[in-house]
Length: 510
Image (tube, rainbow, N blue to C red):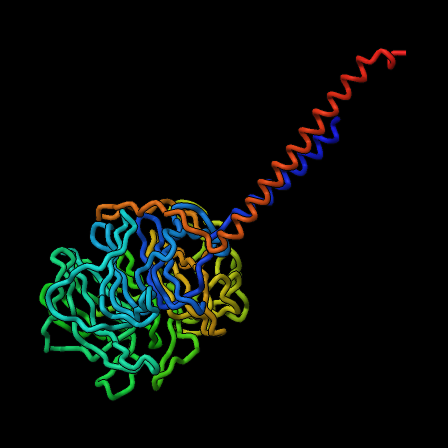
């Protein structure tokens, strides 16, 4: 009688496993670029973007940064199916001061119902508490539609939008460009177009923007043009546009330091110690994207100095045994990530060879590989020069991605790979303190911000795209389990009855 029970147990567990697999629906977002990303209370929220699918998508999803994971096994959470009010890309998104509202502004907008371009609303807002989108009524000056913009918010709750491009021809995407500054007051819900003529920059788009604690907005890179009849040209990365939000005046600063190739479609983050770190991007010439990698892919602008200073070099400490004096040299060449516990040797021809090592953060060893593992420092040259054969862990050359600052990490999201011209769904992590790219992400929560935190809403249960087949599979599995259970129960009852009859029959005792 043990055989029926074992067989029943085996079939039941097998069907239960099949049902679990059928009912599991892990959300995998489409690959995209020219999207937006915002961090709200340890959650990296992804909005909009131009996807690699033929159908328009409206999903809103996030990555939980409070849990450890690696960038090859990401667990995305879908907040609500078809949550965005429009299919939009080349827009900007800004988080309110109290972390309660996301402002989605500008971009190419496709109507959700008609699948046609619709610029009837320049702004949409997302309530993080109720997980609802709305079309706010904005008074004040009229602001034309535009794309390729970035926005920042200052401490009084005003969002600043500079320049941009409005494609009036949706086949060639040619159109008019802007060099105006528009201010959205998030409290009074009004637009103001600032009437400025002094030191006004050229029309500009696809720049990177950050705002310093003193209220100065910094615009870096992108493309600009003198009139709508000419082609865009790349902006010199050392020509920094500055806008003072107190005096409403423009100025320009000529940054010094390392040479940084001009670019557009790149990302930037402002660190707490005053460095603007940029990554990626692509080149541009005569109206076309040049699909070659920019150099360097990663660079930092020190805004603590006047003028600002671009750096891509490694710092070398020197001690003179004759004069007993210390000095410091900024080595050139390849990027070598910071490390400790590595080995080094000095060759007879003046090369210092280093190998291995590990990273370090917040009093702990970070057990991930350094990049590169093997490097050489040429001490025959002045300044010294680092050389390496590989970029272990570094992302490929990409553009149209986003970057967010989370604690000591810059998080790179999605984009297009220049080498393959393919959309990416990858996420990369750069440790700013250790100057290394890592594949695993597990850190202590960041220092609480000065803004009043507002929790992101509990994700709504999405309707799976393959719900029909999941339901059919679940139904078949349950019916099969019930049928098999009934059959085995019947067999057991019959066998027990027969067994009782055999014991009690007098003839069988002979």
